[in-house]
Length: 230
Image (cartoon, rainbow, N blue to C red; front, side):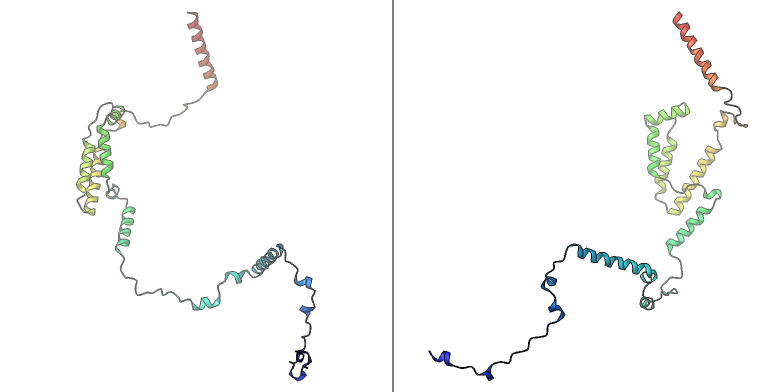
């Protein structure tokens, strides 16, 4: 085993040693600079500074933040106002709306009467009129029991009109309201019972109201005193 230590190394077979790189500025820094831990406030401070810079840039250039890029304005297609897909005639819905507006603007007597009637409301009126509460209202208003045939007639008329077309149905309902207006508006009214006031009321509340009140209280006290003496 003596040959193990007697062998000499050949310098030609040894690998060439690479020169060590020159120390840079980063390597010259002290280890404490690399190992310095970052505090929790530094990221928040950085975000705050970035936000403030963005706000300042927006205030300095308000148009740049709101105006769209020029490339978008050049690439957007212009709408074709004269489209060939638009029909030349009005749709049925627009035509009906135009007719409705024309009818509502007409104030002639023929167009002032309602053209619709609720069968549910007509039934409720007739049913209530025939009940005890309805007749109690008739006694309170008119001083007597009243017939409910007019309300039932309105209900059955409304039920009959449901089988007619809309145009004919509207004419029938308007004609019925016209006949009722002629019947009731040209008949007796409250003016047959009370005279119409032709002059406004004058000097209704005048004088010393406090003195009148005191006089009434004094008279009431005298009556009570006289009642106790008896």
